[in-house]
Length: 398
Image (cartoon, rainbow, N blue to C red; front, top):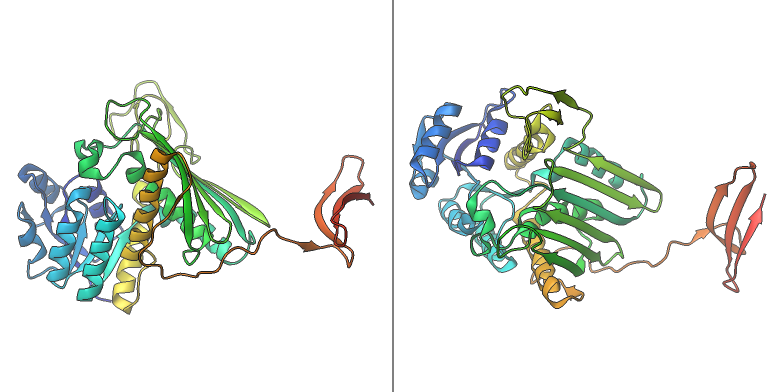
């Protein structure tokens, strides 16, 4: 195992979170250089984390002779420039979500890293939360049967920095900021080899005085017949709400990642410390997170990235995944304007072309399919059956 020497591009909120994960739990990997567009931010982050070098020169950080890995924690409009620098320098490059402001930009980054043969990883942390990893494993082991529907929700009062609110710089609003999480969560449950085919999306600006959407709801249809549903909002009050629901033919999963995790605390006076990401109050009923970096998936995410680098494999999340997510979001924006289902345009698709199998037919006997079996209050069992020959639906009591 080779210890990674990292250039952190970005001295803001997400860069600071990443460094906490990279330096935590006595991990031997180290951030050796911090780059920020702001000298004060670069210096502050370096001092806080004991990092010897800081700079406002991106090229200098990327090409530093001690660096083998570049982590891009920059605003969306700087991702392409940073990836190009890292790829041309032959450095492994890991990029925060979303990969690009649109699919065309994401495709440029994918083409760059693949042409130059550098390791690439898509830092989609919410696919790496401990709960999500366990839930996806259960799905892959068949606990839920075929997946029919995944609903992912992320809502909060809005992002931290000014550039998020400018669609020219960010690529959009709540969809580009939060929808990327929800889409990729659903893909992990439905199956990344299952092709996303079309989208229906509503998006609007309900509260904030901005030119982008602050609330959106979308349905993403997959070739298997499964539906991925997301709701994202910058209008939610009361903190950050992260929830997922997964429904299969044979079971269901409910996950609550952040707002209500079993740690509820009331304080009349507060404690003068950080409570949790996007928390709006420091008094009253609070919902702290015991280990925020781990709960949000950062620890497992970087472990997967670095293990893949050491083993010469692809990580769980790659630039290709980021490109697919961007293509789905492009269709969401188009649908929100056209008010109809819009196809998902993928110039490159590396998964299956198979389509859905149709309704699940469960044999009851040689004459009937079983629709439903239910024990009713008097203790008897009611069977709802479909006649194979006539199609007639009947019920039997036993």
